[in-house]
Image 1: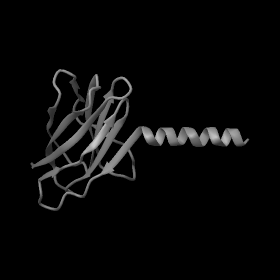
Image 2: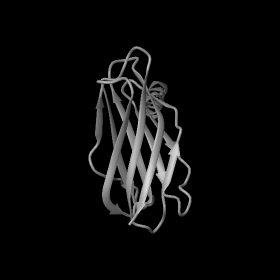
Image 3: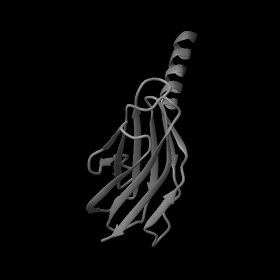
Length: 151
């Protein structure tokens, strides 16, 4: 029984360490632009999750700008960035906004822009950055910009 509990605990810790979630400050009322210096490190085959809480009751379109910097000699094979929106935390579902954008290791550093031109009323936005590569690869999400355009 002890071995079983240790195994379950180990699995839970492994899953918890694979994805890192960063909750960013609430976007102030009447503010449509926020820039964050995040400095979060993306390791080998892991995911970073950033959650934004946005303006209430206002339909907006959004632009997400993410700056990725490579760290060290081992680089990610690719890094995918996806955006999801959520209208209610009580319901708990996330809806994909557009398609994920993937950066392939053609340059050392890059800036990725995801633009959503369809107005929506999401309360929360989730930016997921997922790296895929061999062990030891590291990239840094050094800066993010979240822009909302009032419609």
